[in-house]
Image (cartoon, rainbow, N blue to C red; front, side, top):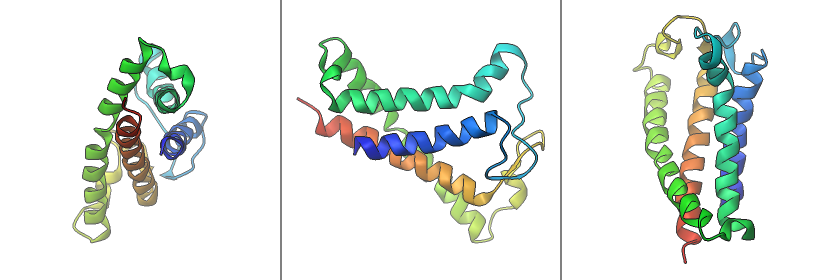
Length: 147
């Protein structure tokens, strides 16, 4: 289950890394655009890939011996339980996408507030599926590695 969660984290983190490097995979038109400047802009571009890497470390730390250090173990478990809350976010996002595909949601809702980037609906589904799998992996891995 931890490996499945790692794949989900790397899937979304990789997508954001591609966008940060100027790629247009999964976008309707244009490039990923962030209006912020300076350090905030750097975090907006690279924060998600870094957090995805952290998710991988948390999940693998729960299943590999190097995560059994007395001080680190409770921290990893607490972070995993907190990460399991992604399940709630992902279910909400998937409900919105079901409404979109059923025709009950205006497609303009998939454009950011500045109107810069329009994300493909399938990409939004991919992101929320990654969140769902990651959230479930956090919870199940934390549960299965309890002692």
